[in-house]
Image 1: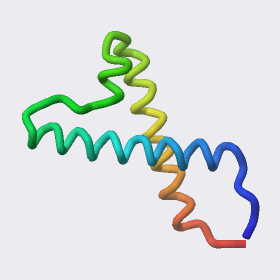
Image 2: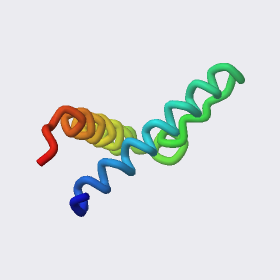
Image 3: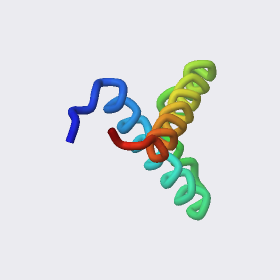
Length: 72
């Protein structure tokens, strides 16, 4: 198995953080509260919150593309 580079590991962590955040958002909706951790941390800096969401989305696209890439 080839060693994964830093960009790969950053993408992995962003996808994990994004997935956990979405899970908490869903639980919060059912519980009638806001459990969006990204919003709790960065809500006062809306542009930075948007950047985090964009990076999570790009990481997910990268992981999706890697799923379909032929192994070498």
